Image (cartoon, rainbow, N blue to C red; front, side):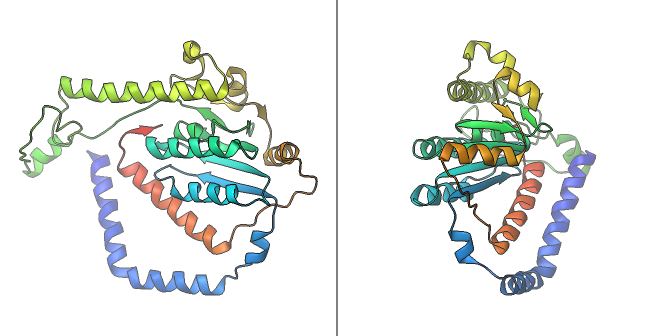
Length: 289
């Protein structure tokens, strides 16, 4: 109950802030955009690309756009895909994973687990040529979850009731105004199981692991980098320097030149990550985590 109250208070505070300071926020962002220089020439001239996936995965579009640009850029010979993510929505994680798989057919990709590479975050990087993990990173959590709140007790206290007209026995699956019924839980379990089977199947194919032994590397186990290497989820341990060096070797680049991210784009990406983190915490659904 306290958690629900906290969520409601946070949402109210966020809405109030936007209403009261929206114009001022836009003005500040415009000033920052105007003052921060953009060196487009320096950003464009490079032969190795670093792409970063940070925070909860709620949409795939930003990463997909970067991967498509790399695929079309003949000057770029390889990609370092850095991941620090706890997971997120199923479909975007799959989209990114399969985009990596397509790009791998033409250019080498080294995946670097910089901090947390878990669940959907792990799924996104499984098709890289190699996965190198920071020795202090956390890997795994190959599992699926659907969660929701039962706020019927709170509604009863404040005198609120819901009313609904629906057709179909499962139309209210996941409702928040009462406890879920057995047949509704069974329906959700069907979705969970199917998604989990797909997750394990893809990990097994990408990492060349035995799907019949998935209990050792999947089943939502959480591993240190060293433990993940032993069960086959990563190839090597190292820091970003090692991952960059390995990519240069695979791409056969003797004089590596890396992309430099535009400062303004970096600023807006950070805002997007923070917003996604809030949404991921407040409004969970079917997720890989």
